[in-house]
Image (cartoon, rainbow, N blue to C red):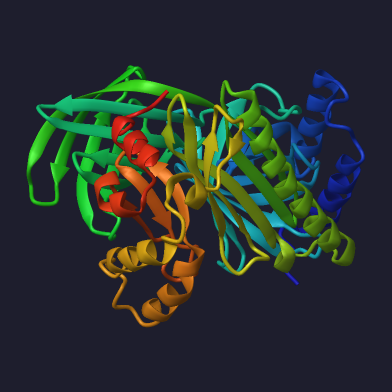
Length: 455
C-alpha cells in the first residue's frame, strides 16, 4: 500500500478527520489559524513551512478553499469544497514552476492529480482522475486567508450580442462566456449561419467559426479591451482577410447554481433577463434539473462510501444558449448533460414575450399539415453535413427527423436534431424564403422584418 507521508500519514489523516468537524464560517481569523497550523503539522519541521492560501475554481464552476504548505520541494495541504464541505488531503512536489499535487484517499491511494503552472498571479492547469477517465480545468488564485464563503458562481460569465457592417455584409455574433474564458455561440455572416467556439485571453480572444455542415470557415481575432466595442480581424480558410468593428448591441445577465462534493457535482448556467415571465419559466426548468440531480447524488452517496474509483463519478451540467432576442421573442436551446444519461438532452425554445409563455412552433408559424413536407426539405439539408457519410448517420437521421426541434435565428428558423453520442448536435437553418410555401403569412412577415432583430 502506498504510504505517501511515511510516519506522518496517520497524523495527516487524523487532522483531516478533525477538520471535517469544524464549520467553515466559524470566524475568519480562528479558522485561518486552524487551517494553517494543520497544514504545518503535515511536515516534520512545522516552523520551516511556508503556508499559502488559494481560491480554486474547478471546471469553471466549483469552488474550493486550498491551503498548501511548502518546504523545500515538498508540498502538502488541504482542499475544501465550499458548497459541500467535503475536504481533500493533498501531497506533491514543486519542481521549478511546475506544481504537481495528488489527492490522497484515507487508504493511501491517489484519487486524482493536479498539474499547475503559473500564469500571471494565477496557477492554471488540469485536474485528472487517477485512471485518466475524467479531466477538468483548474485555476488557483492567491488569497490572504482560506476562503470560507462561496462566491457567485456566475463571476466572469456573460451572454452578449455583437454586430457590425462592412459594405452590405452584416456580421452578428451571439456569444456566451464561461468563468475561465471559453466562448461558444452562434452567428450570421452575410447569408451564412455560424457556429462559434473560442477562448478569451487577457484583452483578446480567438474565435473559430464553422458552417452548420461542420466545415471550418474563418478565424476571428478580437481585441476586447473595451467590452462595448470589439475590433476584429477575420481570416477565412481561403486566406481572405478583413477588419471589422463590432458593437455590443445586447447584454443578457446570467445566473447559476453549482454544487460539488467528493463523488459528484452539478452546475447550471442560465439567462436572467428583464422579463419576469421568462425568468420564472427558466427557473422552473432549472429547479426540475436540480431536483433530479440532487436525488441522483443522494442515492449514490447513501449507497457508496468515498473511494478513488468513485471520485467525481457523477456529474451533471445544464446550460442555456440564446440564438435570438428581440422585443417579441427569446429563443435558443436548453441542454442538460449528466453522466447517468446516455446522451445530452436538449430542448429548443421560442418564448413569446407578449404572451408570457413558450409557443408551440409548428402551430405558431406553419400552416396545418405541412410538417412532412418541411421534414423532406430538412433531410436534404442534413444530408449535406460533413458527417452524413459516416456509418449509422442515415439510420439515425431517419429516426431523428421525427424529433426535430425549432428555434429562431437572425437568418430564419433553425431545426435541431436530438444530440447523438457520436455525431453530436446537428442543425440546419432555413430562411423565410426557403420556408415560405409552408409558413403562415404572418410568420413570413415576422421572419423577414426581424432578420437582424435583437434587444
